[in-house]
Length: 236
Image (cartoon, rainbow, N blue to C red; front, side):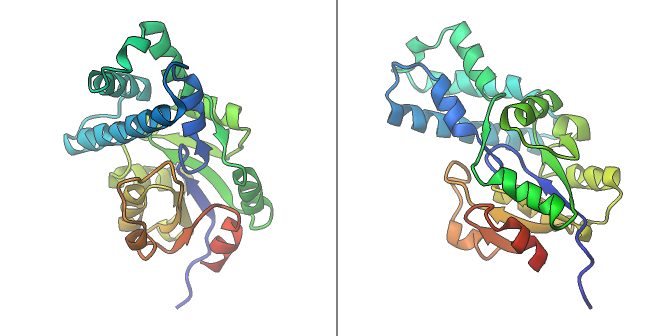
């Protein structure tokens, strides 16, 4: 029996479509050497994901991402006595603000345009965070989508089933008609359980705790970037 026709693509946003790392590095205090700043940013991002996982486990409502980022930043600074003196309140606010202005990875704009124009698909952001964050990020990245779905709007964090089910309900599509594109295995695992098709995009900034050799065999498609995303989805 042939697979149903794919009609839409849900995109995770930060990491998958956007280079969050460069924005955060630029905003960190200049007194921190670049290699140290990179490690600091990667660990902050990792702590943010751990905090979200904890909130999912405790069945807590989605929190404003700026609040989560501020809390995890303070916790990280407590573990980083060499860096802590460089962070006053103004600096902290500027760095959290930097998450609201990110550039797209170089190939993403063309990939999304190809899905819309060549394959005639609808494209949506489907990501944890707030709607304000997503509005700011579409402006700074220049990427265009049919609609933005945030965990704030959907009322649930990914990878909870209701996050995917609510998105599907709003676009009136069946799970097998939708592909989720993400650079996060936990997200794709959640989508897979709900019946969505899955495309993993490998980004060096994300999933630093995952074994990529295992991830390569786990989903419908594994890509090193979005250069041939349209071809990969056509193949599904």
